[in-house]
Length: 179
Image 1 (cartoon, rainbow, N blue to C red):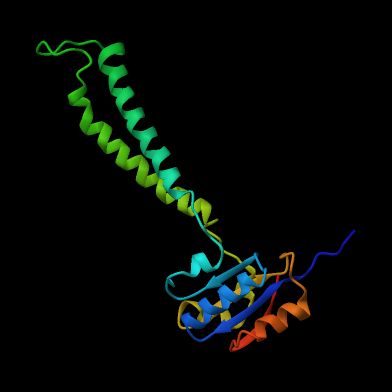
Image 2: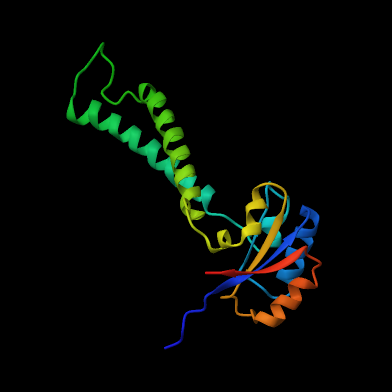
């Protein structure tokens, strides 16, 4: 039985977003795929540099909106035309114009709730613990520093070679991240 590797990966610290973006592009071009970047604010183009192309959130929102709209409409239809047939003022039992406001509101409600829940689920949030929190310098990731972490589970990861590669990107420092 193979012993568990206590090393989560290697992390490089950068002083600005341009250095992080360039380092991320070079790392991805170098064949590394299990990597992540951390910055105190959104960096334009960083997701593409990490190799992230598409997200499932729009599809989740569409499915949530359709489910809410159809569910709201058919709930009203069932209540008014099937279960409790009550003719008011000579209107037809299936009076679809009166169903539109509730249908619209449920479409918006379910789409927005599915967007929030889908985003949290796809980002695996909330995540109260992550191995990068073990690095004391990582506390500055929400203030003024930029970090790039290559996980040890990456197929290309070899500790000495990966350390040399990260050092060639001119970071402030390269640190080991323990599990």
